[in-house]
Structure formats: C-alpha cells, structure tokens
Image 1 (cartoon, one colour):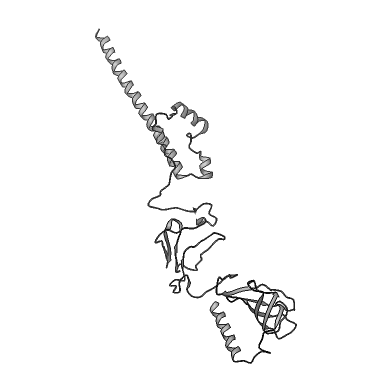
Image 2 (spheres, helix red, strand yellow):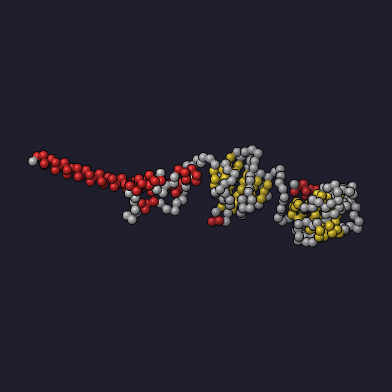
Length: 312
C-alpha cells in the first residue's frame, strides 16, 4: 500500500511540474479543512488539522466532486515539520456537512501508526532490508501479549515465519523459527502472557486441553518428605490412620475424590505426599517385622519350656 501511495504522489509531482502554475504559485490559506473546499492545494491552519501537532500549519491537497451540492473530497495532508507525517481522509457524503473527518496516517519518515487491517503481498522485513520469509524480524526486543491479544493466522500449513531476537534478560540470545509444514524450535522463546494449546482462554502460563506426550517432565520442588525418617517425626499409629479413614474416607493430607475432580492435582505436590505415605508404610513394615521377630523368639522359648515340662 505504501508503494502505491508513493507512486501516486510521484505522479502528482510530475504532473504538477509539466502543468501551469496555479494562481500566483502560492497555496491559499484555509482555517477549516472540513468545509467543502474546491480542488487544489492549500495551506491549512487550526480547525480540521491532522493529528500531527508538531506544527500549527499543514500542507493540504484536495480533490473535490464537480457538483457543488456534494461534499465528496479526497484530502492528503502533512504538517510543516521537516520530518513530516502523511495523512489522508475521504469525506464522501451527499450533503455539505463536515462528517467523516477523522485522519488516517499513511506513512512517515519516523514511526507509523496504522488503523485497520493491513494487507501486504510480499515479504515484510523488520530490522532487515533483505527479508527471506513472509515475516522476518531482527529486533533487540519483541513483546507479545503485553497490551492486546496477538494472533498468528495462516490459510494453510505452508507458511514461513522467522523471528530472531536478543533478549536482555540474563543476556540469553533467543531464536524462534517456524518453517514450511512444521515447527522447528532452535532454542527457547519467551512470551509475556499465558499460552493456550487447544484452549482460547488459558488461565496459566501454559494451558493444554489435551494429552501431553513427552520423554521427560521436570518439576521444581520446594521440599521433600525425608523428614518422615527423622527421630522427631510423629508417626501416626495404625489406629489413628484407621479412625481417619473411617471418618474422612481418605488418607490424611491426601485430597478427596471430590477435591481432585473439581481442582485437579499438582504433580509435584502429589508425588511428595505419596512418597510421604510410602515412607510411613516403610516404617510400619519395619516395626511389624521387629514385632514378628520378637514373637518368633518368644514362640521358640515357649516351645523349649513345653518340651522340658513334657520330659519331666
């Protein structure tokens, strides 16, 4: 779109160079750009000026409908500022009222602000003059999802998206490359907001509505239940365990079926709780083994006594 506009402006400049001078060669001054102006070039001041407030004065180019009863106008304008911005608007109404007066920015030699969907047939390069992908970005920082929801869309799987950025955090260089019919992650990629797979409203950093298949899952923990084996640990008696099961219907410190179905489980926390129960069971088994050994010893002594009594 920007290329077409530049070509259009170049044609205007060329046609002006081969045409006769308008009036005395100086643009007349108008104080209201939204009034039904005649076709021509103007110097504009104040009312109806572009959003560029770096100067009060604007250059204005107008093409007006031939019927004086209609307010059909195409306007191109920019401020007197040296590093100016270019704006356009079309007031297309079948009366003389100054409606549809909002300016839309076309281009500038500095930052650009565009309103509406922008369609470009070709590669786009940000930070590079030779883009090799549909979108190729070389930037010191990329923020996704900071102020609005960002969406990437493709009509089919044959897309070519390349992002390469240097992240200041921890001084790590990060790169994300997506290429034809698949995804190739050459290193990590950081996103400011939540990421959802199969879900449009993720409630956590990564929300997946489906099965996760991985070779390994690593969970960071803040503690581990080896305290069960310490002397000061108060191991509940089997009678206390039995009473809790009868009253609550589940082991102590283990969520009930209702809680699990409602809230799910935390893998790291649940593994720690299960290990705690395994360690408690281990202590019970050790205690039972000692009791069995004592009972066997007592049985042997009892048999020896009975044998002696029989002999007497």
